[in-house]
Image 1 (cartoon, rainbow, N blue to C red):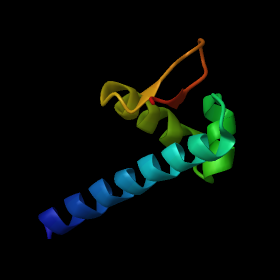
Image 2: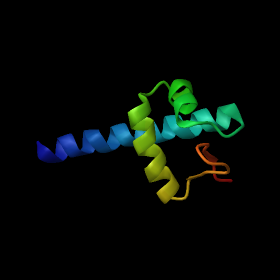
Image 3: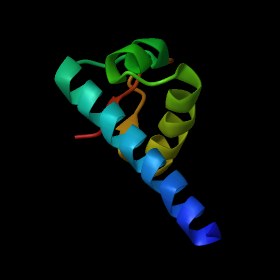
Image 4: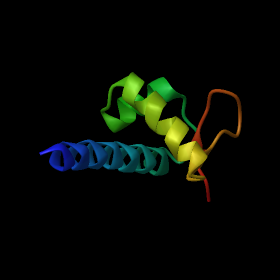
Length: 72
């Protein structure tokens, strides 16, 4: 049961990360976390957490303070 819950949480994070990347690609420009949350249809606090992970993984970067974009 514990592994099942852990997998569901991991899948939810992966889906959120994918939605964030898709929203940035669709926008075609850097976005602020609030704009990104609205575009991805996710709560801002979840987007803030996901941004930290995606930046650490090298999938996103910040071209200007408080804006994020997909690393190309």
